[in-house]
Amino acid sequence: MPRIAVVLFIVLNLVAVSVAGETITLKETLDRLVTRTTRARIITGQREVAKAKFSAEKIGYYLPKISFSTLPEYGISEDYTSYFGISDPISFKSASASGYGNIQLKQKVLTGGDLTFESRFNISNIEYPDPVYEFIEGRQTVRDINTATDKRRLGNFKLQFIQPLLRTSESRSAYLTARSNVNKADVEWRINQTDLKKEGITAFFDLLTADIDRQIAESNSQLADYNARWDSVKFDDEVITEETWVESKSERLEKKLALFDAQANYEEKINDFSHLLDFPSGREVTLESPSIPRRPDSRKAQWLLDNAETTGETELARIAMETARRELDEVRNSAGINGTLNASYAIGRGTVTRSKEKGESEEDVDTKDWQVSLNFTYPIWDGGAAGAGIHSQELTYESKHLEYQAARRNARNKMLILLKRLEINGSKLALLEQELELARNKLRDAEGRHNEGLISDGALLENRVYCMEAQKNSLTTMKGYYLDLTELEKSEPE
Image (cartoon, rainbow, N blue to C red; front, side):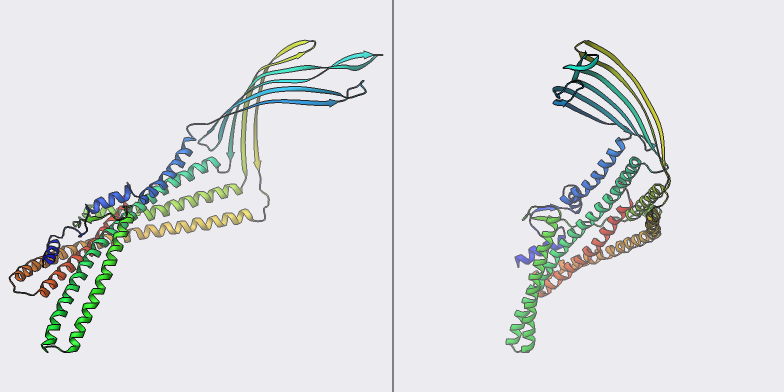
């Protein structure tokens, strides 16, 4: 009897599932699920990757890509060369040392071209053979090979602009693709967040319902055991037949088996809930039964209908259509006449010093160079490959366009159905709450009459089962109500 009284107290209060541990509300469950779990980090990570790639492309239009490279070099070379007037070749060994420093700034521009500024500084000391000539019998011959040195201190500055014509720029295409990807990632994040919340709602209510099923199974088992004991007494008094007594015992076994199944299902729901929220194994929690939330008022419902086309599915269909359209334009442009404008300007400054046996000379270097070129490519014949590619992409675009139109047509109907279902389930919940309150009152009355000895244990158990069935019906409807409310978040961008 004390055990029954404790259970009745829990049912009467209807505050939480009877699981030992900390109390967790539905709001706390969802907050943890979308912020601190592995699934949440994965969803957020996918969005952050797309944002980082877009930022990298975007920065390229505002800040140049700067690179610096150096190449120090030292070498020994030996040459074995024949000279006029000398019968045997002469071997000459020379050493060279040089260093190159190169700084490059590459900047993308909004027209889709590339602007490059390059600065190169060259320091080198190069040895080379310096033949010493003499005249013998009126003929010039090489008497000896001396070593001469060429010292260069040169700087070169070059500015170059390359602009594609009559075709899509690769840099511009990469920027637009990254922008589409980040927009798509934002929508997918919203959808995934909503779906994750719906998983949390399902796991939360399934655990609540599984616990009630377990308690119902336990009460039914106690009731079947109570009936079997009474039927055994009745059979001994020859009030009932043996067949009825056997059926009563069989019923008791069936309810025992049902209790085992309910307990196993309950443990499974606990594991599902803990796994979803990344709780450590064996952690015990208490789920607080949620209250009935308010459904959207008429003004909010009208706003949702007016903005039904901003649902996640519709936005994804629109982005896919726009991407297919851009890819179609790129394929068409690449198959036609293509051109490239290349313009550059360069200046060089520095000195060149030459050291020989006869003396040393130094020359100043001051050079300027510029060029402009315009190159066009005229396609003549490719066996139909370009036309096939264009036709294929046209079909892809048409398919995405039709999908987007279908999504727009269905968006308002889906929203109407969703709002209507919320209205119906809200009305059902109001009635189920009244039914649950009646079941509570009936259980209180039965408990009082049982304490006075006016009803049997079996009647008390039947009232207990009736009350928990009413609670289960309310939770089942409330689960669908919460899921539909959460579905509305796909139409509300952050």
